[in-house]
Figure 1 (cartoon, rainbow, N blue to C red):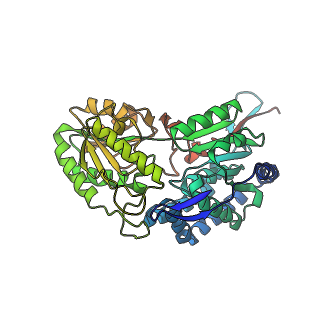
Figure 2: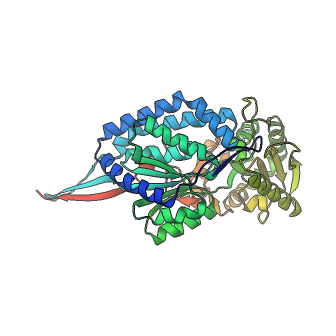
Figure 3: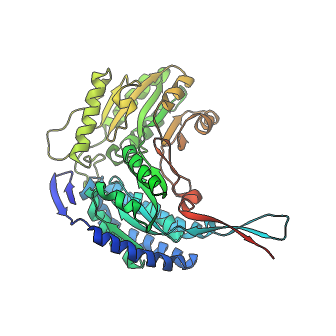
Length: 455
């Protein structure tokens, strides 16, 4: 396992792969630890969650710098990521016991009907590199509160983060074998999925990875939750506040240097406001600074790996060859690091790479439409369905479009799509299935047990 600093292209560290013998022993030990954890009170679990939140906040600079070194996240955003992890821990420390309370079902008989929420056991978490702490903690907080244990298979290029999380859990007072990180290449995930000690699988990653994991988990009859890729459409209607819309759209497109499943990617703009939005967006995009992610003044860092940067550039070039027009950016800088400049493509249509595929980097794709119906149709014309947004001064109009007409798991009005502990999060179509966060998230990996008691 090798970590390379994407800003300098220098090797940070190398980590030994976890052997299959070690994996088997880890899962054996975790089985006993999970059974013990399942017997603890919800009050005790909440106390551990609060301690975890405290440690995250106390050490946020250390963890943020580690993320920035391993995958290039701008440092200010990395600090924010750690703070958000602390938030979700506190949220479930407070709300988890409420979500897991036994529920009495009304009946006209002498029997008592009860719905009880019990842990499944060991959950395998297969996590990506783009949010090394948040993607895991947003699963771990509800899963631990529910009484499960977790074995983490993190992305190979953030092995340092995976081990730091393991150390963090121990410091927070979780038993050593309740959570473990294993360092494995992707081609050995199948053995973990099929291991009899594993009771469920959650994955955040590409659609291709999700399909592979779902197939293997299905063969093993293991419950899965998949949060996969996205090509979020942001619809700019004819009555939108253009300055406000452009500001939020640029912010969303450049989150994590464009490497986010729920960042804005396709911009569907009505003809009457197209030119005004285009110029406002271009002006705000041009003002963003690309450079060393450790410098707080920089908004855009490098992409996480060289192959990811090269893939993005090929998608841009292919789209141009297919008829898209390059407005700005689109050239690989002549400098060290895996940087790619903020880029705008217009005249993007279905059938082009920039429309059909996920652009995982700071590239915006513009499509001009004539009508509201046309805008919604184009927005929904995607294999993905993670998030979507609509901008309009008519809030009632926007809410109806977001609630009823846009096809995605999270739709917003005059706002950017983002995950929030208070709301269920997940996608439809090839963006995955199942939900994380909120009440729905904590109930994904539990045995929803029916209990009938006769008097």
